[in-house]
Length: 171
Figure 1 (cartoon, one colour):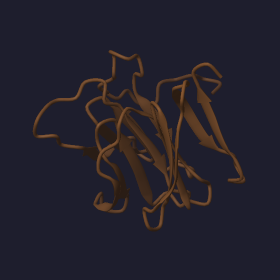
Figure 2 (cartoon, helix red, strand yellow; figure 1 turned 180 degrees about the vertical axis):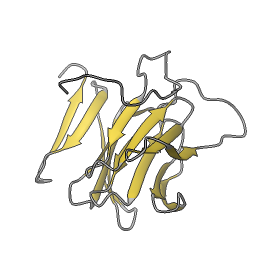
Figure 3 (cartoon, one colour; figure 1 turned 60 degrees about the vertical axis):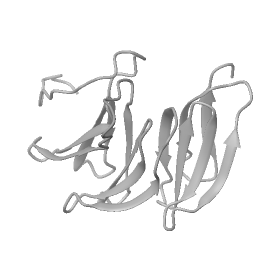
Figure 4 (cartoon, helix red, strand yellow; figure 1 turned 45 degrees about the horizontal axis):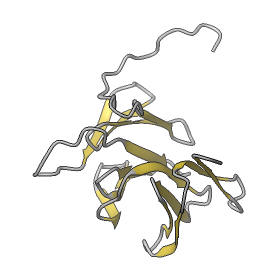
């Protein structure tokens, strides 16, 4: 951080309408960088050479989806990427070959945030008005909470996975 020099410039397609820009996630081991873009797309770069390794995008044959940002989480072993997209699916991709490993949900509403527990056992997903927790191994729904007045904006697991932290409007 002392030099503040540019390591790599990358083109990205941000969500300008809602002001979410792009979602940037570094893997726990520092091997991968995921850039979640508009139109339900994620680009994954290797930090060893900063080259694009994978580009994952939900293809909707009916239309382009502006304001459809993608959010990403890496597993602790750096072997998989969990990707969620507004008006798109919740999926898991292998980083060894880029193949789809699992689909958890076929269509998510107005995505706000995505979190994966440090033990890789629980996926938490927040939409505008709902919070879902999902068992990673089977894809089974653990819980679904609907908020009455507040919109969810961000979620995160505590380091020991005992607490799921929620932020929203009108906290």
